[in-house]
Image 1 (cartoon, rainbow, N blue to C red):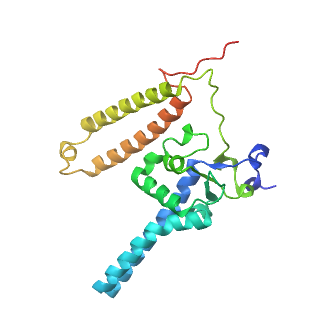
Image 2: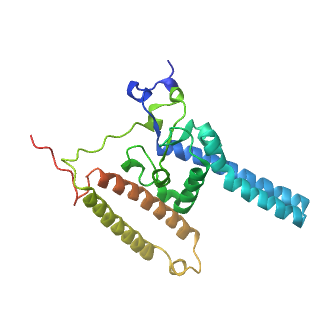
Length: 244
């Protein structure tokens, strides 16, 4: 049997929930398709050079981009990116494709929250982002026979209640750590960014690289804090060892 078709026995009989790396690959493919559509429309509009056609083309492109994900997710279980990365969006209630209204809600939440929607993945039992939790959906491996172990997780067991702090304690501790993280990142920006960039008048190339690196670091640290806090590994709300 080839490596690509090796699935652990336990995982073979239970849903396989996509890791972030797999989901990111699907998002990247969809981004590439979006850019191709936009640049293709701009090329056609500049070639024809007719105002009426350009406006009509612009409306069509916007409609296509807005409906691309909801239509494909609700009717086929995923976008082109999902299909090419062996993923499927599944409705918790039915075990099938999510409905069109729910697919629209997923897209809206994902667009509003951006990458911040994914920071809770490791703290959830089924690797769900915020837009998954709110719409009660999951992203699963479409064909387990084609999946590799590093591409998915199975449902995580809840920590033993007797050894874990109360949920409100963990949530409060996570919030405190997140506030401290944001204060630290704001302080780093004030200290390391140039004056003109801070007041919004002009940011140099170095300032923009620093902002990108800082934003990426904050996202990663948020994910670590949320995952560690929910599992009782943060000082202030640590899990207690089981008594013998």
